[in-house]
Image (cartoon, rainbow, N blue to C red; front, side, top):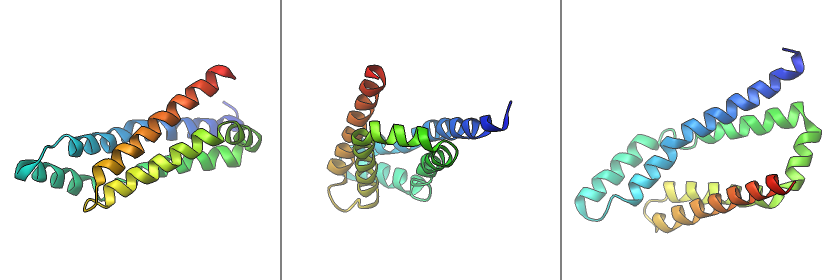
Length: 135
């Protein structure tokens, strides 16, 4: 293994951690969405919120780590990816922001905000797939 492979291994490890640890994030959000109404649903939502509140944003640190490693180690690759996938990256960023806003502001219509943010992430993922297949 050469020294120029180290950033690639770090970026791949960060992507794996982001993907694996994101399951708790999405799982808690889906648990809140499907909890139902009434006192039982409120207890489930409070439990999911209390368990995820301290760490819900921590998962995105892995994504920032991957972007920083790729940007620093492979600037030409990062520039090519960012320019080619600018629209899907923007949609994904808006989706992440809306999901976070829906998670933090439970007192407003967080369900709609969370669903809209998740739909944007699905649309962005589909656009990523189309760009990669077409390229």
